[in-house]
Image (tube, rainbow, N blue to C red):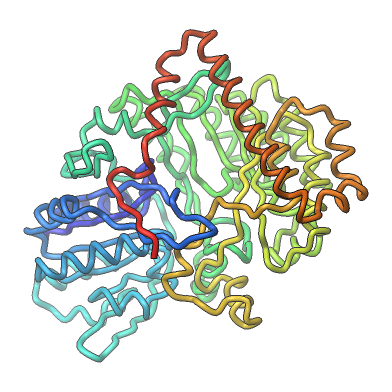
Length: 530
């Protein structure tokens, strides 16, 4: 059978879900064409609602590339709902092939998905998709395929979700073959074959020592997460799998991971580093970490980047990975307020967060500055809660960066359900999916969070600004606008410093890359106000 998988995806086109599906479908003897539609969510802003749309030429390219498909699938995350819907509606007008949706968002809202697609894969889709293809090939009844919801006229066939895949090593590695892969080229605004050369251009450039940049290949070595954060879709997925019998957090074998990395390095010699997108790489048992470190150092040897959490990070694991080539660690703090941490089901104490940050700082000669994740603009959060977060950051050793994001209500997470029950969230349709992820409101605590991203502000300045007197003074609405001006001036000075450093090093390529990024966001995707 011929399957076409389409995915609106972030700009890096890692798209692990469809790459895993394609690899398994091909291993089972079917054909699979992958189409990546990279694009950011950069036009989503707190003060307006934007609907993303692809231009007609892109839709025509999609129609042509899926013309011979026996089945067309779309996999996407919540913020890409509008784009997936537009693609689906266009393909319905020009093709008769059945359309199936899958991924985190359709799995969270399968009834909504069935309003637009013929079928919805819920949960992990490898085995469900292959069984569906085999039913279609034989002309057999697919309405009872486990893990599949089917719309038939006014009828809805809601089959139970399949158990989680216990043995990840039974699956092939992600499909990065570039064989019958296509990508939306933002420069041309059209779809084109994904070649090795084009992949080289698309791979993310991560910071290295001395202002250098490394071209990094992203992969995952596990499925799942040890935590149950109430704002994260993982909590909803775990709830659906509670009676499964298979642990939600599963690891690929160390040797299988190393084999993949060796193959990637041989296939793509331009890869200069690896970035592991596991929710927390340090969740692996120490024996596995040490085994991985020894094999990686001997057979791969490139710098690598990981995510952690304060509760899984410890010195023995860190030292083993440092010896193997680890250069960067990031982890989530989310809040310094004990009340809000209970709301988020984040169990780490502030003392544990400080200890984890100090551990990374002790090894700063071998690590890039870490990034810490913080959530802002929580409707249950008071100014006192927000200042607890600011004061926790004051205790952490510099240098560090911050990844600050709004609280977003992803469908059927515990916080989503609570917000609906309390009347805080009344519009739960597509307008919710257009809420910005990176657009903190103008408040004094958020101003201080931004100030913490500057590495050379004297500590006494922070100490003064986080005092109770300063909080009372600068939280007045009349003073928030001048603070916004200070923020813009600070960003201008930061840009001048970076530009000056690049000029001093003669780093013309980096300067050219910056100028290139001044183009409008997503030139291949139009956004209009709704």
